Length: 69
Image (cartoon, rainbow, N blue to C red):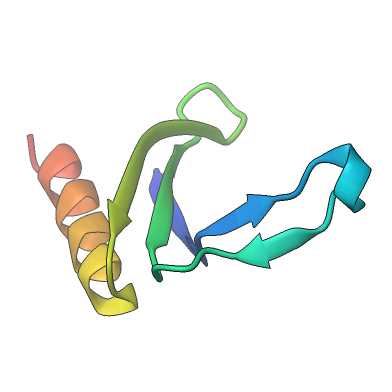
């Protein structure tokens, strides 16, 4: 079984600057494609796109394509 998790791109500041996370200046969204064939969820793919809808569509297509092979 496969699933995905979508999140927005961020930068992590250095320890000198407090290690805070700040949003990326140019908006990017990422999807972790996860697979649990071995009994634990592990990343099997990573997708980046400029909009949430684009990355969601690509993640859905990736999962459908892999399952239907």
